Length: 75
Image (cartoon, rainbow, N blue to C red):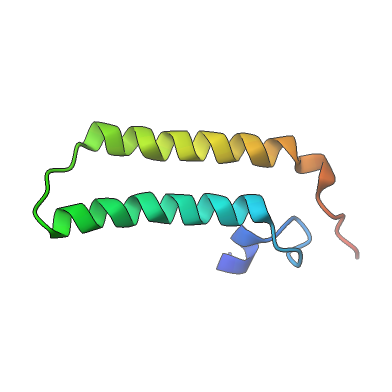
């Protein structure tokens, strides 16, 4: 599995805005946590876990809602 597989639709060619949004949102929260830790700030792990959970749930729901609009795989 490659990054391309994670960020494209089921045909592995069409970029998927929902998947890109999921990846950028998740990486932003993780980068914010790393930034705070690197600068000596306390990190509330419960809030961090809730943030990641909300992002994953929201984007999972969005991907599920649009599953029927994905381009079909051409063999």
